[in-house]
Amino acid sequence: MQKTFEGVSALSFINAMTDEVVVLDDKGHIVATNMAWNAFSDTNAGDADYYHGLNYFDICSSANGPSSTEASMVHEGLRSVLKTGEPFQCEYPCDSPDVKRWFEMNAFRLINSDDRFLVVSHRNVTVRRISQSDVTDAHAQSEFLSALVATTNDAVLTYDLDGKIITWNRSAERLYGYTAEEAIGQSLEMLYPADWPKTIEQYRDEIIAGKLTNFEATRVDKNGEERLVWISCAPIRGADGDIVSISNIHRDITEVRQAEKARDTIAHEVIHRAKNMLSVVSAIHRQTARSATSLEEFNKVFGARIMSLGTSTNLLVSGEWSPVPLARLLESQLAPFVPRETALVRHQGLDVVLDPDAVQVVGMAIHELATNSAKYGVLLQEAGVIDINWSHSAAGLELSWKENSRTDPANREKGGFGKTVLTSMAPTMLKAQAGYELNDDGVHWQIVIPQSYVQVTH
Image (cartoon, rainbow, N blue to C red):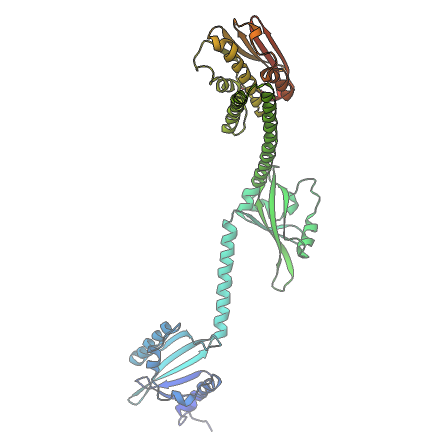
């Protein structure tokens, strides 16, 4: 005998549903709940009977907090179902103090005679939402990492356990000159110098064992140019947890290391020059003190000589300790003694520059010659002429000071510090040959500065 559906109550029908279901009257009051709803209330420390008679609309409209937006949307949606009969569906969060949950709501209108009801079912979709969220997060993370790899200035690459390149970003192309098409599938050892002591297998084993996470190495680009790179590395695991490849980040530090080397060189050079300067100052001090007849004379002469040394040093500092043109050095040393335009001093020679050590020594020598001339010779009498000439030969730079004056040689200093600079200190410090003559015709000093201190610029 065929059974009929007649006589089955609405409550029996909703109790057969596994979703949590409430039935609302046309004002929004809860008039019935199914067993699944009641069980959910019991599980969450609630009282199923408490909800009977409550206005579901009011609960939605008075909601506040993180879910208030969804509650307002549910309120409007349910009223629309009552009015139009069109089913309503949405998903909304329903968190407890301890658990985050998501529910899917489905609502439809039920008409019995002249009465209208809303049947509202609630399905827990937390697992699906979490899975979707994980997928979305993973996709967003993947997109972020892809964008990061594509835009970073560092070369990012991966290679398999045999050392074959798998991925190769644009910065790797810029650093090494190989396109992705050229690099992928090739052994990473194509970047190694010919005599590199370590194999890709050795690197791989140390990385997998956790013994190596970053290191500095020399690598070679497509044009054969060596680059210093800082390499960060890590193993990559597959879905089953097994290591399937190795990731590398290569940062070009060639210019950084060159700058560090240059700074070290400058630091050593500064120390070297400071020691030389102290030695020179000490020698000037001793010789000046030896020949001075009074403290006043010592202060005057010593101060002038230190100023001369300072003039040469200023030229070096302003040029960042690069070689100084000889003509410019002469002008700076003679400036305190003679006007810029004068017939008393003539100089002529090739365009040459002196290295820093020679600048200080030659500067002191010129100062002593000019001082002596201002005391006894041409620059005192404003008569005669000083010829300063230089020429270049295989032996080096031949520099000559020839002063024609009418001063009696007997009146000039015979063995002061000036003569020591000209005949001993300058030749010794420059490993040069020098000659000094003082006679009735005046003063003649010449020195042959070794080629290592000189550069011809024209």
